[in-house]
Length: 238
Image (cartoon, rainbow, N blue to C red; front, side, top):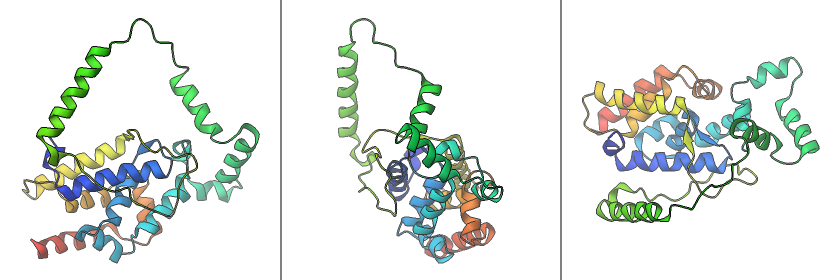
């Protein structure tokens, strides 16, 4: 029901969020990817972010600096690169040495093996009929509700991870889900019947955990100042 209340622009940003994560080779969508997609939009919320120094180029640079590229990026997501560098540990150098010895994406393969294990062989006959019916129902639903499917071109950016996936669904992290839930609360607090980019922006910049606070700090942006500016900009255009 939450997605039903998203404005078309908000849905497009969510689609672009997935494309950004895929392009960077990340196996999940975090609030930082939502911030990157929001900063890239030509809507008022994106304009306010850029006016305060939160440009898509800057956001992407910080994401890559903090977690890197590729499927194993989440392995370093909770580590403070600057703090480790201060004691002589270079995460990028560690990754490079591992991949030099064990091949590209060695960390991603190891992480997948540890958390998912080897795939078990399929047992019994394949259930073809339910799959065909499910596809039929999905096509009928899409035909009845064409406006619900966001058609958005893949966004571009500074980086392209080697071997990045060209398709497939990427899951939302718990923090990304939390930020979307807070987006709903922002809309409710303003008694709005829709969920727009202003609500998404207000939700993201008030986060106190994850990468978004670090990204904003590195770009010299003040969360309270951004909150005031976004609220004021949408008050003017309403």
